[in-house]
Image (cartoon, rainbow, N blue to C red; front, side, top):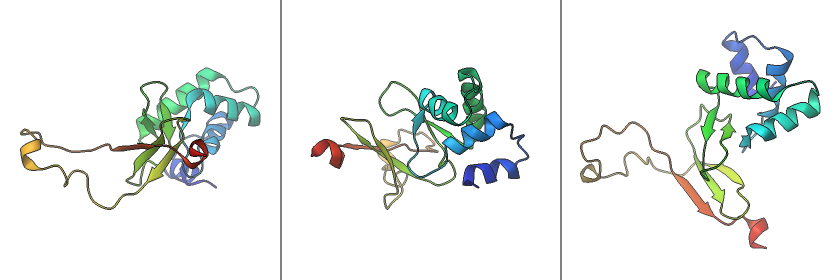
Length: 137
């Protein structure tokens, strides 16, 4: 059983067939699918699942804090099930591939006091950009 499914069961979230298949699609490392990609993959497993059900389920998972919405290119949001482990993202500037990375250091601590302008900073999002090995070849 996937980590996401275990967390959802632990919360007592009702796992219908549709919700289960969405959670199963989101299982794995470096998963950052768009809603349309989640729908296509879910429909491979459960052909009758509707696009609206996928969108609603993703919205619920985000509201529960079990999935993170990621926007790295200003276009389609992507959904990251790695919501309970601090990480940043590495994005290929050509193909859009996204990988979770765990750099050493704390981006909040790296922001000097004079650059905070009096803000009480509570979070930082860092996106590393480059070209993946496939696109570089």
